[in-house]
Length: 144
Image 1 (spheres, rainbow, N blue to C red):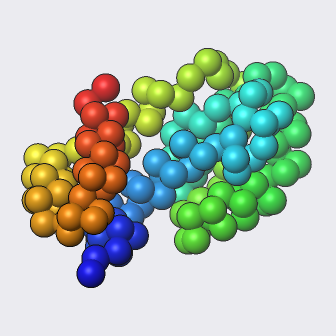
Image 2 (spheres, rainbow, N blue to C red; image 1 turned 90 degrees about the vertical axis):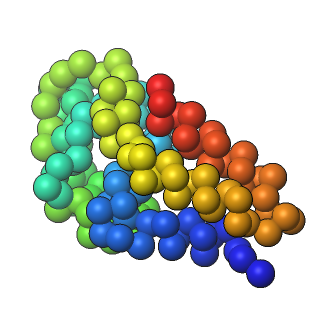
């Protein structure tokens, strides 16, 4: 019998896919990781080479996050159970939306799409509907 988490973990075993998933997790769970107050006044702009780039509403928030930098790095890394984030770069900037960055990270290749289709076909019937729903939603989100 297959377990859903085993199938998903198998997919993300490679380093590149695992890092992409971890970045995606940080983007989509930003408020949960840092809290509502910080997330309302800051936005992730990018994660590259171990550096998390965050734009802040104003200098007050830049200073506040600078004081919390080590604690935030620890929270981000604990959330993905790896040392993905080594540093945080802060800047005053536009905090409207980070959706453009999210889209860059979760683009699916043809191979990824084919893997999803093959996996859906081979999943046991008791999991098939829920798993198909999850993977189809993921695939559709990647098209936006």
